[in-house]
Length: 432
Ligand code: FAD
Image (cartoon, rainbow, N blue to C red; front, side):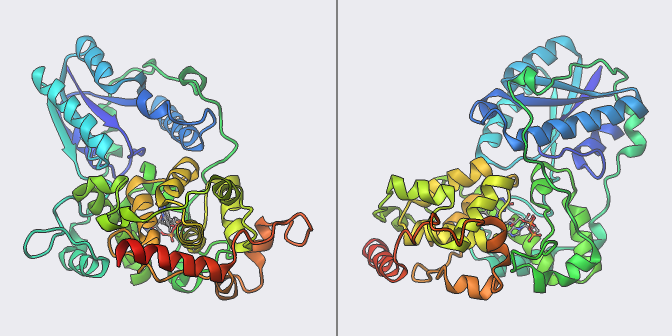
């Protein structure tokens, strides 16, 4: 008999709640990862996130082979079908895994749970990727918070640093199934090639945390933010460890950003329809212009507004865009060009290394004005004064828009004043 631990967005051995629980049980543990064909079929062949997941799994598996005479069993296909095969191949007592909150994942886990219970196998799932999940932080009448600041206050009130224990599994890794020849898959086995874009290492030093408040708004500063995004997304780092670092430096600002992540996660959990519908329904009445040629220009970073173009070009080349610039680029698409936020959200989802449905949808709806705690619709970023405020010496712009002084660099795609008035009139018509 064996127990299974199923990796999903928690790709690490240390401080992994579900894995730690599985290893404490008394049966050998088989580690499993499934490349879900439903998810993979929508991705480009050189998808950078997939390369990162694949590399991470290979590194973990190699470490397990070298030190624990074990490895990760990797599969490709439909998760329910794969579990049906695993059930015939192994005598499974329990399947352990960590919670996954996205609508697709919830549905998948429900099906797997049903299949396992029909076969008298227990499905044990754990909270791992957040400090507080689901209904843990709600208002006194048990309804979800839809405004960030009171959510954050309640989060902090409930938070008890002494309970933030480490779920250390390393010493129990000897309890893994001893087999170094479990099925392994190369990128080409699953129809992919290696991406040229790589996930950078994150940096969460005391210096970074302490300077964060002063550096985080300036995209030209090299280590101004942590670059934790993809690591939190795929679980190559533990959120508990990062929160501990923020507390150790007594840094409210950095800590608050990590709470924003949980705020949007609970919003998507409570309101799964917001993945493609406005949180405030009347915002779905906006008459978007949705001009295809303008959308193409935005996607190429050819709007003629240098800070917008720099952001998009950074995204296209690296899979990353600085938060300050994300806010401007998103606002510009929705408000200056009156293009549906869902178009922009989909484009970011294709490109961002740190793409996460809850954060992406939440922030896009914030920019469009349609979401929880959103920017009011009449707040329209001025793409020129944003340069003066956040890239005064044009260092960031010069990094990404090399052709800025050439005749070929486009003229502004829209006049700011005209676009502003057009936006106000269109939004007013729909929502006022
Ligand atoms: P840091 O500034 O070092 O912040 C540390 C961590 O805090 C981040 O890694 C992230 O996990 C969390 N965080 C910070 N700001 C936010 C925020 N506003 N919302 C939620 N979490 C936050 N973030 C994503 O993780 N995935 C996305 O798909 C995503 N899409 C976005 C789309 C738009 C239009 C905008 C305006 C923002 C988006 N963000 C998204 C939020 C933010 O831009 C990124 O988290 C941040 O830029 C990542 O860089 P960092 O890790 O260096 O951040």
